Image (cartoon, rainbow, N blue to C red; front, side, top):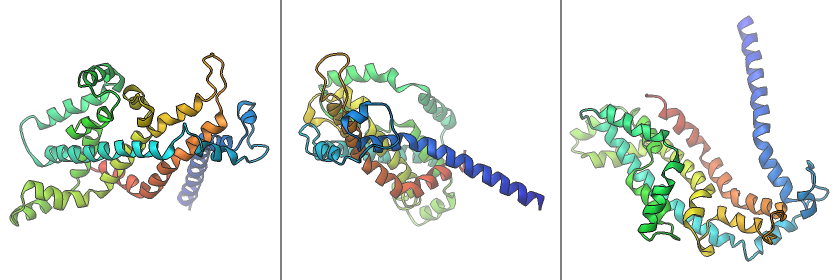
Length: 287
């Protein structure tokens, strides 16, 4: 009886903690949504939990702006996401399959050295990458943002795939080999169907990461017609930029544009969250 009472107290405390944490994490999204319904004067004034009147004109104004060509910028972003995600999922999963299925000398040592790359900050490689892409004449193009994905350069993706692949029983491959299957066919017919959760997990990570990325597009994209959706928000921020240091940012319009732009991310995440949780959990079964 005492154990059941303790369990109930622990569960109650856990749920209270989760609710409080959820509220704290949701505050930025709440602030974004509320600001998108405020007038310009309210958005730059002292913070209030609710606007004096919900103003839907912000969304109408944003969608009618010449500076915010949402369809064009969305398609630009999706073009990068499709190529980058497709290349990374294909090559990183094949690399991970090689680490799991093939036995060779110093395999674990090679993988450990491979994993040490994760300790390198991305910013450290920015200048070398920039100089390489500049010499290749790839500036103002999308190539710097997706070409490397076709060469299995994402160490974390390889690690996640490898951890998941190690949970697949070897008996399946032995039976397939008896039936005359080669390695690539086993990869296609056995490993891929069983790895749906981890593939969806990596797709969600790549989708949200690339969709929200402002760092790489700012470095390599120069023409406005090639801007991604995250870059287009800056165009609205600079609406009232007259060159002075103290120009006002129209936060009501910026918030409306930002909320419109994150709707696809929210929709994709809620669609795949079941597989995301399953993929992360299953990837940690074998270490």
